[in-house]
Length: 307
Length: 244
Image (cartoon, rainbow over all chains, first blue to last red; front, side):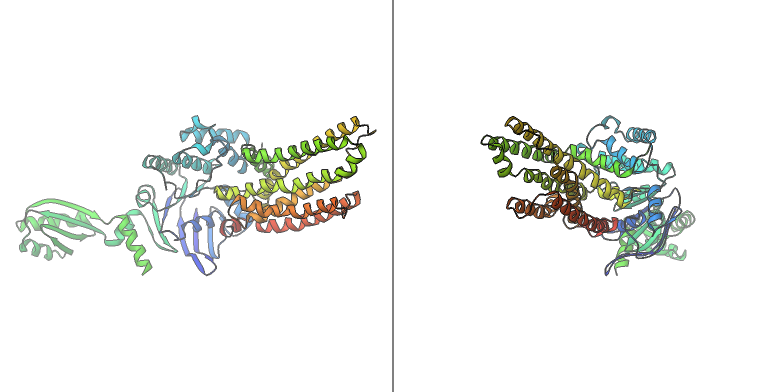
């Protein structure tokens, strides 16, 4: 659905996006994470044909970006939720949606149907004749999402859709994005919110001008130090440590009566370790498998990229 | 049924403008105020004789004031329509729709053009009707207005001046970050038109039909030149990356 190869955008001597190569499949929710100024918004703007590329190529749906003719075709199949909601505050909720419906060449009946559908879906139908300027941030964000969907786009680009929202409004927006995911919409999400990315996205790309890493949230988490087994014992002895070393476990670390071991396949490795400890006379209190968080992975990958 | 996209854009702009009281009062109120004020001037001067009123007031000069208004009023709406969208961050989602730059520019141009020109015509019509009524009652044996000079000024020069004003506002909008700034720069269009007014009042420029047609032709050429300039400036990428 979205495919890029060495996509690059420069502003004078500044490279905003450098050799971006990625692929987002149909129905996938792809999250682009990155620090401020990493090139996330520039990437989305190139995909929406709002700004041109300097080099490389990108394909949105069936169309290659780069020509005005394709730009119009691409804009018909995409919906954009920008980081600033950009609603006409002196128009009502209904008028905002209706205006965009006309710009997407929707007929009167199509607009009427979709306006009602989305306003009801997002709980704004009762407020349809209220000026958008009087809406709360959450309501505005929901209306901005509805606006991006009035023409039933195949791909939806969202730039920080839950930024500046209170937890309840953010939850509503996230749930709506998950509903769209269930409808097999392709969603490209720019976000700073790691928790949100982890909950919503099928795959995540970490961008810092160039693409540092890409994978599922689990793959990215494991990319730092894989998984770890933490075993809390009543008493750690040298015999227990020797028995574990004989199993050639990786990165055995002792902190008081707690042992931490790197594991690749805990389902196979943990029973062997538990058996060795029990045989050596150890008494196990708890066994926990942990992995690094997405936040750890993100910070490590961005830091490595900077150095 | 789908209709012409620039008209859809213009309709939305007109709806927004109609809800901005300050713009509405300014656009409708100013021509009305001028019409009423100068009608009263005509009435006062007519008391001492018809000939005094026509020569001392300069009947053509008064109609020309509505041409000057046509250079001032559209720039206010155009500046709000473009810079206002930039300030309120509504441009990006608009630019992400399958509309061309030309359609957006034309739509905004239509919305900036229609209310001020209609308003200027309304003001001029009120003034002409009131003047005719006053002058007829004072003994003038014919209707002074409408006449060919007023016709050329209102039907040729005023619309062309309005278009020029909008084009200057578009160009100004790319260089400033607030509506007031754009309006101030676009307001500079006022100067040459006011200069012509004073030239007329001083007898340096006669508001004859031939002079007015020549002046209209000059403004028309300026319209063409600035059309291409404003079109080259009003591009998505320029707006998002280079406009202040």
